Image 1 (cartoon, rainbow, N blue to C red):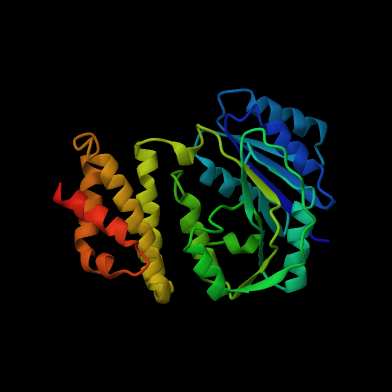
Image 2: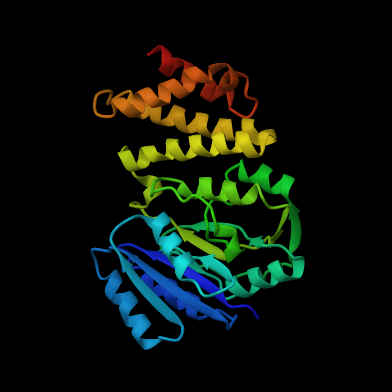
Length: 304
């Protein structure tokens, strides 16, 4: 059995953190280490991390960093990891007892560097029955990228990865959907992944989660990540450039609409998005992956 490092970015999640850690400790795969990265929490999350690390020093390690965002927390956790394989969990989510064993065994059985499973979105406090995992299958790169550009597999959780894959990847600063850029870099280099079509990871979305934040410079970084991903795809996987262009166009359309009501406060971002749209207008309008309804919305925003 190979050692698997479970990396958990922690930020102000005292209400859910113990549930997350206990779920990881109940894994039926014995060779694990848990790395808790406290991202400058202002509540009792850091103390909870320290308590678990003190009581289980052979199983749990903790590091405290100044608030830098989940992306940097994950990167620091990867650098600390002793395992040949790494997996992830967010501190306000939880996993099946078979999370590690199923994804690790799938990766080994299929001879791939990555194994993936669906993440199931649940309501706050919703009870969950853990289904028995189905056998693994091979997902070729063509199917992986097709689904990836349809908004699947963006998050780090719900997967087991050979640690070496993260060497030389670019990690953006914390924004909305920073995972998208990193996963694009990774998936474009993989011929195939192992896939388990059973939800093993449970994502409980809370009102204050980053993906629900309103207009801010951090949230606007979503456009930067989508734009950087499109440029990367154009250089490294040109067949999927229109898929990536559709995503950055959707993001541009969304934020241009939000910025229309606040033109002075975020004038630099507004102009950056306008330059992108005008510079790629013809490609955007003929893109078959960009919905025609959104094309109409974009045209109306440009006129206004």
